[in-house]
Amino acid sequence: MIKAAFFDVDGTLLAKSTDNLIPASAKAALAELRRRGVMCIICSGRPQAQLPTCITGGFDGFEGGFDSFITMTGSHCYDKDGAYYDAPIDPAIAQRFLDLAEAEDLDILSLSLDGIFCNRHTARVAELEEHVASKYPVRSIAAMREVPLYSFCAFVGPERDAWMQEQMPDCIVTRWCDLFCDVISDTSSKTAGVKAALERYGIAPEETIAFGDGGNDAPMLEYCGIGVAMGNGTDAAKAAADYVCPDIADDGLAEALRHFGLID
Image 1 (cartoon, rainbow, N blue to C red):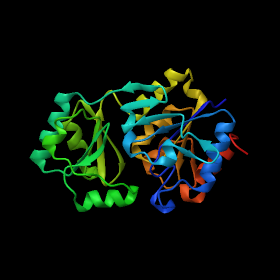
Image 2: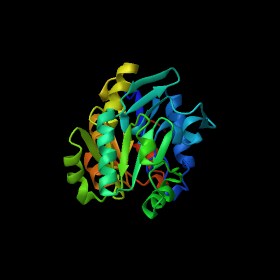
Image 3: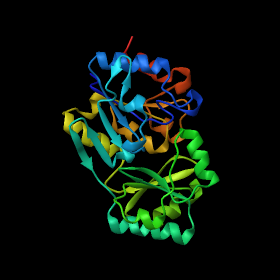
Image 4: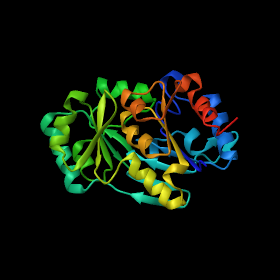
């Protein structure tokens, strides 16, 4: 029996092809899933400050938003009663990454509890902003050094993932798309966030279903009882999944939930 469903945000619940809105079919599916007693939990790379109101506040039939939130790729998890998992990057490790960004002149994003910030506004940053319908304020690397940080995005291609992992051996280097890689604490991941949620709510992995589209979703899709990759997802996500549904714009989420008998 499925008791909890985990949902990535970008490319899974909403996408550029859906005008970065949750499609009506997905809204109806989520509302029915909740009526059937299944917890609906977000599992995203975004911080709390950049989750859209349709996620945090909900919509008709899905009032109050999602039941729980795994944010910043598993680094900060919370529900209405407060945080239940909090794993910022060790300050010394964060400083080393920022040193690397300065030495290599990298375009980066830093993620903190108050949002996502870029070190400069470049064409690559603007491309990501357009893709996810968000704007990233500029914060200097010097200012980034002054606050607790939970993860980074480095705008390097996939061919530099191994190099980045060599530079940051005590972190996890993962990727949602070809535009950038994520650098997170080795105590964090979407799977770590899922495990924290399951411990909090007394749910077993086999009682869960997860939806995702990126390479950073692949471990979560493998860990949960049922892993569903979106048709618009990466090869890594699809390889890790038990089932591949149509694109989110083609009512994929609702189709998958019907396929597994979780909604009518």
